[in-house]
Image (cartoon, rainbow, N blue to C red; front, top):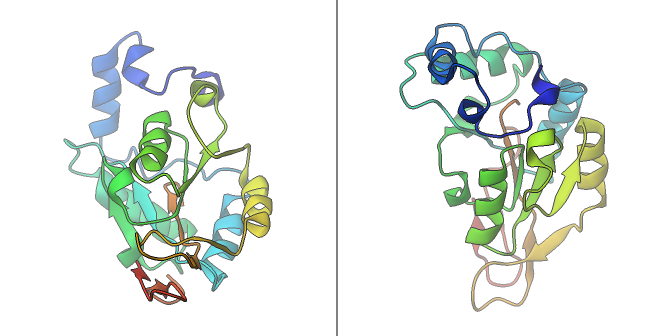
Length: 193
C-alpha cells in the first residue's frame, strides 16, 4: 500500500528489490496509475492560469524502454490539453530553470532549493518525506490550489544585478502549455524560461 511506504528508496524496503526493478522495467507499468485525488481539476486549472508556465519534470527509470512513452501516453489520457513540449524527463530536477517544484521525493525537494536558494519547493505529504527539506508541505491538490493563490505575485529576480521582482514560474512533477513560453523581469528584462 503506497500510503504506508516510509522510505523514498523503495529498493531499501522491498523484500525482493530485484522484483521492484523488474516491475519498473515492465511494459505497462506507467500507463495505469490513477491520478492523485483532485489532480485532474487542480492541474487543469493550473494549465489554464496565464500566471504560470507549467512543466512536468519526471524521473524516468534509466533502463526502461517504455517509461518515457508510457508517461506521455498517461498524460495524454488525463490531460489532453497539456503540450508535451513542456514534458521533461531527468534525474536532476534541480537543474531545471524554474521557481517552484511540487514533488514527493526528498532528494529532489532538497536539491532544488539548495541549488538556488530563492526557489520554492512544495512537498506532497507522504510518510517517506516527513523529515525532508522543503518550503511548503501540502496533503492534496486542493491545498496546492490554495497555496498557489496565496503565494506572492512576484519573487526576487535571480539576476545578480537586479533588485526588481520577477514573475513566479512554477513547474510541476509527474503525475500531471498553455500560456507564453517566457516571462521577463520588469526591471532587468531577464528572461525566465
